[in-house]
Amino acid sequence: MTPRPVTPRERGATVIPDRVVARIAARAGREALSARPNRPARPAPPDPGASAHVHGSTARIRLAVELPYPTDLAAAARELQRQVTQRVGRLTGLEITEVTLAIRRLLPEGSNGRVG
Image (tube, rainbow, N blue to C red; front, side, top):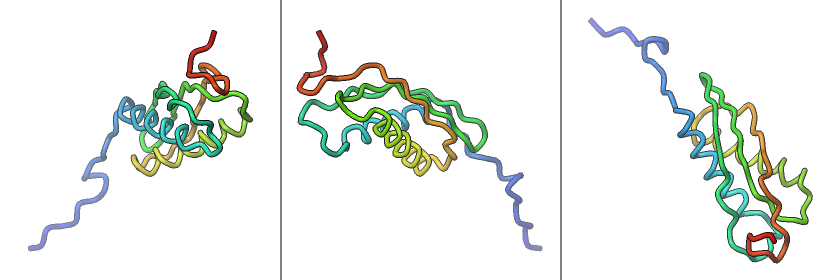
């Protein structure tokens, strides 16, 4: 007698904790910020703060970032969201439904990250 195939419901599911998705998102954010075109030579920006909420096969991400100034903030934010969505989705297999950005600070061009 051959064993019957196991249905997906009986196999279970892989669960990725929120904190793991948050770490992946922070890394993806750092990679995206470091790879910006036309980025003036300066130290790499600090790692973004990240949090995530996973629900089933979807996730919502929140990143707190520092961005260079002057720059087109709206375009920079959209590109960062796009790159983080793609990278985290590819690495985790989750559908990223939202990437919310909080800009902690703007770093003036020519600064070493210190303001004031």
